[in-house]
Image 1 (spheres, rainbow, N blue to C red):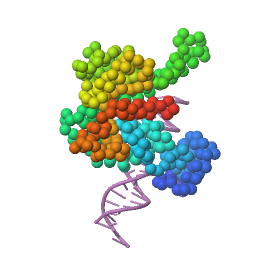
Image 2: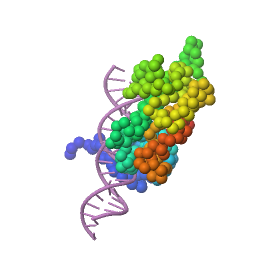
Image 3: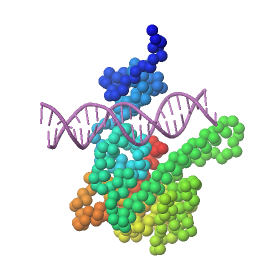
Length: 340
DNA sequence: AATCCGTACAACCGCCTGGTT
DNA sequence: TAACCAGGCGGTTGTACGGAT
């Protein structure tokens, strides 16, 4: 009676995986590779959907997964990258070897986010909450925002350039394979151009960064050089990989001269600096160090927390520059997977 | 001992993207 | 060009667990 159940849907199992299921999945993938995830469950004898198998493998069973407590360095990396990339967990995960995006996401949502919130920092914007307008921290938070915008744009531009470069290479290869190509051969593949100024110029997002008045523009805001700022060369005089973001409000006295002299040196000897990034003081470490406990903010001689933060975080230009270089190296390392 | 509550994390769901037909 | 599919991604939920009451 009734129709045949030959086409009836097999009830797929949900919920936690059992040890037996794990073993079946592991054994199958070790022997055959995963192949098509959709067809895998039937072949492996699992009553799960392919998607569930894929998630179980990528987030739990894969042999190259590191589990357990996140190190301080990993925490710092997550916070820094989150400030730049937002909730792009897969992109963040490419810079944390052996950690999965799911694990990082969970760690952020259950720990780091709360820690930042407790400290009065908005985990979404990475800016201090309820800070009096016009305060030093507020200015520096704004500065961080500029940095983040630039860096995000840079990463996007890198990805775009990478894709275009690949397309060009493929096109050249195809042409060469069929007819004699009139196209010039592709340039030797250099690391993706980091000159966000040039890249941004080439996009529809912004027409220019440096106008004739020395105004520096980002997609959402404008930075102005102070009157006593050294004259700024045109974009074309920068070497690739150079991003120079000088902000009047960012140069808070200490190290200002040093910063400008370094910029000057950078202009005059661009070949010596092709991997550098020079920026103003950023706010990022203000909570970064505190969150990770690398700096005891209370041990300073200053009276207020704000001063402690200022001093501990923004007092040394070299440190700040190194921080950004470190971060740049992190996100641009050719040995790592691309962010996008 | 029972219950409540917060935390951590595995897993699911819905949407998006890129490739193929 | 549209439809379909596989895989990837991020948001959210479900559940186990431990500590507090």
